[in-house]
Length: 101
Image (cartoon, rainbow, N blue to C red; front, side):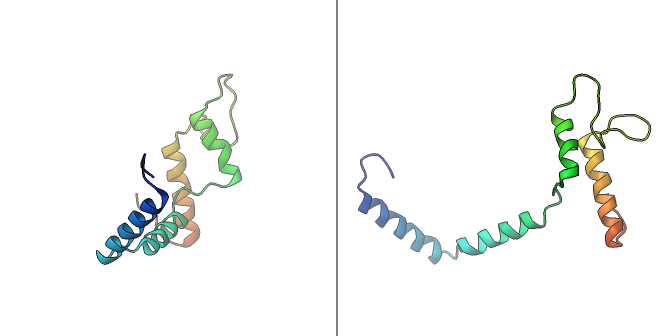
C-alpha cells in the first residue's frame, strides 16, 4: 500500500491491475508453475556429501586441513567449477548419456 491510500482503494487497484494483466495474456499461475519446474530440474542440487565441498569453496579452512572431497588425486585443491564438472560427468555417465561440456 502506498502512503495515504485507504485499504479499499489499494484492493480495488490490485484487482484492476490483475484484470489488466489477465487481459494482456499474463498468466501468473503458469509462470509460477514454470519456475517451480525449472528449479526442480536445476543442475545445482546438493546432497549432504556435497555440503562440505560447498562450504570449503566459499569458506576455505585457514589451518590447511581439508574437507572430504576437497582435494583431487594430485593433492591440488579443486575449485567449484571443477567439482560441478565432475558431478555433471558422473550424472551423465549414470544416465548413459555422453558428457558434453
